[in-house]
Image 1 (cartoon, rainbow, N blue to C red):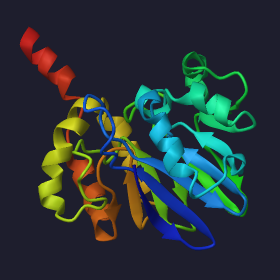
Image 2 (image 1 turned 180 degrees about the vertical axis):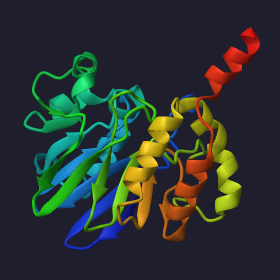
Image 3 (image 1 turned 180 degrees about the horizontal axis):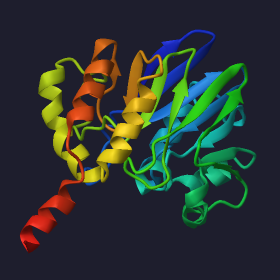
Length: 250
């Protein structure tokens, strides 16, 4: 699994992904590590199928006892089905996840890790000297969903928003935005159910100072491509399956 440092300052952001050894049948995903002082948090640490690769990739950079926190943006298996294995590896850690999904997430196994429910309006935690804001992104695509904003690093980890399904050998950052939109279009139209939720998110996120928008699948957006993505997503009609079903019945 490839590790790329996307921010280096008084704290660090690293992304793990582009795994050539993952099973072909599962989609590639980006997992994030934020390290501040002697503490670290794993953001959307991944599914059970990639746990061993993720663990082996993380330990050269940090000891397990420094990983004090986990974050799950929502309940999907590619996000957090590895929880039962992390529960054994990190018995003293705390999982920050949507309150709405606690009873479902616990099906993955969580006997030692502490569950910290995120309220609907979001909240802010401190990782050492670094504040991390859990930004509401409900219905994009999950009914209880959050993104992570770091004002110091100017990074928004955006979950499935901005995602594209690409092979593991793809570049880490978007290079040709116009060409990349065709890799995102169907994913967003099919997986995002609500134009109202989309517009609420865009309005909220435009108030943030973002240098890197980092989705959980595919390439990351940097610099002017962040604004270009927001403009593109704002114009995109989503929830297309409902419209097609209605048309078929008429």
